[in-house]
Image (cartoon, rainbow, N blue to C red; front, side, top):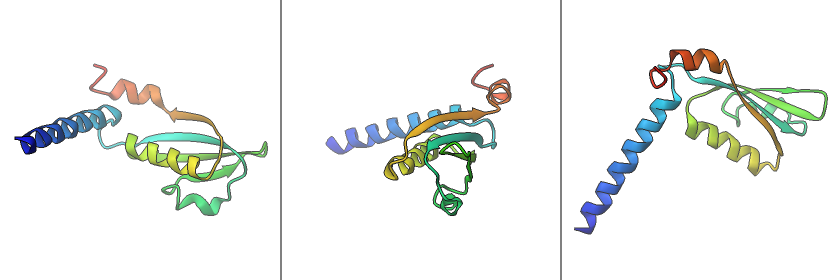
Length: 107
């Protein structure tokens, strides 16, 4: 009986995760983010940040930009920023108006 409860719980969480990911995607297009952190981050870190472009802003901050596959990937990037001890200044979703107009969840 306990095993059935565990499996039902797993099914519940998997279905919620699938529904969540559908909401955060628009078709097959990944969302593009700009993530700004305090500090100068060498562009050599790009591979570690899943290929995001890294550009120094000249004001002591760094901008990471590029496609992010889904929300778990975004949280993974934020965890890496935390692990490096970089203060997070901002996160922006680029082109949000276009994404929302194409989203079946909004219609």
